[in-house]
Amino acid sequence: MHRFFLKPEQIGNKQVFFQPEEVNQIRNVLRLSSGDCIYVLDNNGNLYTVELSKSKNQDLIGNIIKMQSCKTDSGFSISLGQTLTKGPKIEFIIQKATELGVREISFFETERSILKYKNIMEKNRLNRWQKIAKEAAEQSCRIKVPNIFCCQNLTEFCESQKQASLKLIFWEKEMKKKLRDYFKSDIDISHLALIIGPEGGFSKKEIDTASRFGFCSVGLGTQILKTETAVISILSIIQHLRGELG
Image (cartoon, rainbow, N blue to C red; front, side, top):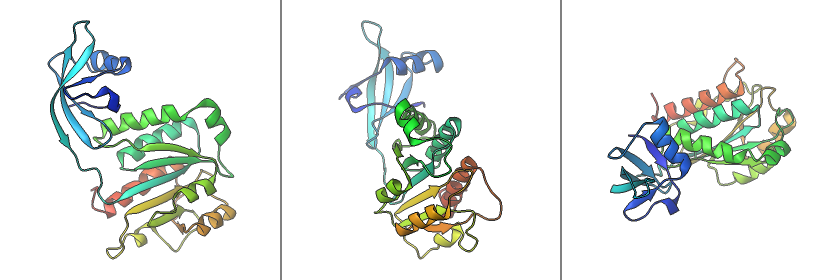
């Protein structure tokens, strides 16, 4: 069944209420009508089975048939720090990182960033990015939508990850340490923080900055990947090593 994340104020004891954008999606895109059932999620771990119906004024409402609590905490979470890049690539990264299980994504400016923090704040891009994460979470059957943030710089992101149990920054000049070295059976990781750089890579100064906050530099091999390819590769490897994928 199709899944929709709704705001808490849209969910009552017996019914749910849809906003115009959601009504358009349900009626005109998905072609659902009265009597069809969907799943509604409240982003707090609750899943509702809802039957669609019309009210007296023909607005679309939903009758709650069943509510169940779903497990939201696997004991492992990923915070992704991603350098700002071109708009379409950012949207692609949000989609794929959401599908691959990240808890939050923070974008930030670096020395070689294509896109600048100031431009993001002026154009209020965060609302659109959060919507993309919501849609990707619905499509991939996530129980919660990842939070999307924008930090001013690398230092600000590193400061936000003080509680992470393992911190990794990916650097093409790191030849000794590989990703798999940090996922041995005797290492207990509850919160993983990752930093992925721009197409031009990080400067040595930026690697040193991350190192002061406890981030270890790690390599992926001899091939140089585009930033969006690196995101998918890294998250897929991690989920495979943890037994969640493949």
